[in-house]
Length: 362
Image (tube, rainbow, N blue to C red):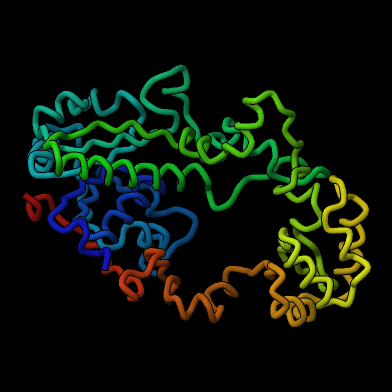
């Protein structure tokens, strides 16, 4: 299993909310020991979005399962000394403060390197450590807005809509993970530590190459919701409503899948229309009207066995009870596990987080 790949690697997590904790949760899934250092009042994620029976958000517990959690006042002399002691024996430190905060606390990259030359220090921030936006406040939606992705995500009649799950938060988290793993690999060969500057905005921006590359070549980019892959140009890639006001995703891009669809529904008249010039406005309307003649269950019964790239848009409770999800054991009970099998074995469940005192860790 991957859960022993990072044995003997100690990670200090000084982050809050979603991106940093998601990154260190992943490192923990790979076998690292993770110590989460929170301010005296705790990570605000403890109270976010939902409340558990014990008053702590299950989302916070999901993100911090398997970690040792300790509260330290980094503005106090005792707190600073405790962090110095932990840094000296750590392999990785991930923090998500606004640029400059670590320096004001006495832990800028130079100071950390002096404490531990082999430390991998990852600074995960909204816009990076430098540049005119370095001190700009933001959240996922504002980061994604600057990438240009929201200009195409939505519907022509509605305009842009927020992306969910949060794109920048999670792409940034995984950028941090891959960068940290690469730095650890380099350290194995050279003995050198690293300072890694990861921007949530830039991570999301790098995922928007499908729009930015054409724009960089001077080509006109499709308007909101009117592109091939945003639902407004091609009948064979979109979301359709059914008679009972449910929806399904429909993506028979390749001719063979389109042919399977046409045969399954007895519409040979549509076979030759697959590659009509875009925007396929008339064909989209034809399909919209057609799909509203049956319920989602009726269409699922016909189209799911037809091998035509159709899938109902499931609600979260339907996802958790889906037979494929159950078989793969990725969503298990109320836990979302590490999304990979290793050596034919499913991912293991995480142990609960452990609230610690600093004396337990030094």
